[in-house]
Image (cartoon, rainbow, N blue to C red; front, side, top):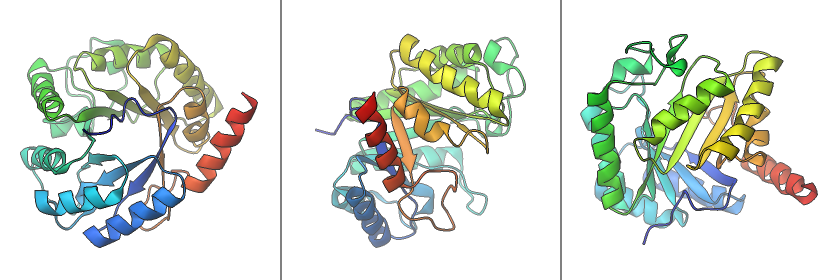
Length: 268
């Protein structure tokens, strides 16, 4: 039986794995395990082979539950159907869960909002949000199929625009209707006020939303929320073990994140 990512004790340290070969991915997973990771965030777009047999070998050797994701990359031509098929292969290979984005099945929504502006969270041209029921139905079908295979779904959204606490609560409730197991949100924080709003939002999400939520702010003012929000109730901390050219440099390294969180919980 696959490990439930949603039921792992919060906050969960996730080691991000972005490697080209199966051997390199397995080695990086071991580094993450040594430095405190409790799950792995496997980027399929970086692997040179993503057939079921290769993925099964990688996932089995990683020794931790795997969340598979596949963000489109500028230098790789791939259709949405092909991207969704990579998720299905990962589930068949043993992944505990997949990370599907709010724009899944409608790539134009990755760059900006394309629907009718009638919700609080559609203001300001947010990215990765769809309200088209036909697209949402396709996402629900994939979520249901994933659940039928004993795996879970993280539904993620990187809005690209700041949002208030009230807007994000409305957005999460809208996303919850698709029945994901975990929701991930990222908004930018360009100044101290937006950073403080992100902290307030995390506290409110913890109180009002049943689905486990991982939320942090990006940008220079948002960096601190990558560690503070998990302490305030966020479910997953996405961390880098060793930085390389593919790393998201804003992500905290595993050892630092573990030390901060462990020490903070000693006084809470």
